[in-house]
Amino acid sequence: MTTILRIFAWLLAAAVTFATLGPPQFRPHSDLGQDGEHAFAFVLVGLAFGFAYTRYRLLTTVISVVTIGIIEILQLWAPGRHARFEDFVVDALAACAGLAVAAGMDWVIQRSRRSSAGAT
Image 1 (cartoon, one colour):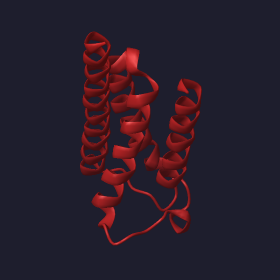
Image 2 (cartoon, one colour; image 1 turned 45 degrees about the vertical axis):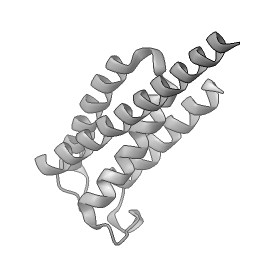
Image 3 (tube, one colour; image 1 turned 180 degrees about the vertical axis):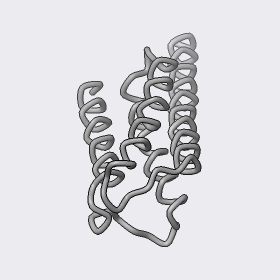
């Protein structure tokens, strides 16, 4: 199951990277607005990596924030794109929120498993 989660997380990260650096006409648009779309995408990425790499939460968080910064800087060289500090902040906070939710859900699941095992 962990392998499937990791493959999904990396595919999702690749899709978000393409949407961020690729031609603007290929970027999905919704009624959420640009910040909402960024937040939604990076919360999903954070959740995916949070569930895929449960043993390395702090390292995963640091790598995620650094990678988001690099992706934002790479937009300086992507035609039709612009690098903005606001986008970096929204993306990094959203990814951290997704990672935190995954950690919280994992903690609840582990705790319920321990209490179930102790009750039998």
